[in-house]
Length: 339
Image (tube, rainbow, N blue to C red):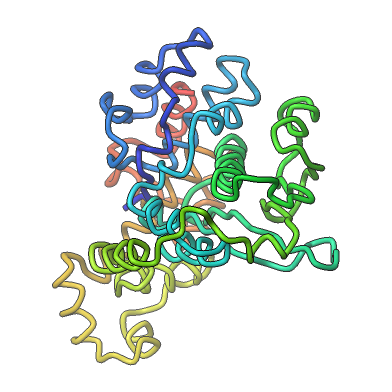
């Protein structure tokens, strides 16, 4: 199953595309996204389709700062039920902890964290923003959207300067550098290993005027009870183990069982309860990864076969026909026509 993201991430997208002279409905259709997705923040859509659409829209509409423009139309509320726990936290540290713990509600492949400053500056920390690229391809526009919203949320919550020292962006500038400097009001560094906002560490102790311990506790209890972190599910653990083995041989059910300290039959029973099987998990992982490599890269089919754990290209071809009803070459051709 492809990783998802809440439709709130596209808040303002339709209006922005229209203002730029584009047709949002045609873009949604092009990337197989339901036409009514822009109407409901809590709807879910493929994060890969979401990100590819942002990159394609920026290119087609000659709007290289589309991600930043979309960020200007969003705020903390795009996080839905997570926003209440963040907003009512006592300090920035507590808010970051809540956001990091429950960001999977917004999308399970996005994470934020606090790391050391990459430049070794005393009293500076890096607030990182990551997407798991083993699950969905890197997207420059989506990263700029995420970093932009991260910054705007910080300004919104602190109600004063954020102590931002620099911004780390993993790709080169898409727009004139002044566009970034004006947006973030800080130095911006490109082609960096990790997307991040580097801030004075003292900011993490900043108190929020919106703090309310009773509401925060209720919000956290609701999130913990209503949403199961997919990272803790048995199926996700198996998927991660299989994913980490690639390229290379797929671990057997017995090998996975030993790693999880379970009897193979016990593991099989647990998977039946959640409506899947070991073989189905492996097949789904191969299908999603093969589709991503075929449709978003120029890798040879022999290379892709190896990356998804097939010994021969012919095995990949048979599997792709079973999954998608066409050959790998035809699937790649169809994807390029839709761009």
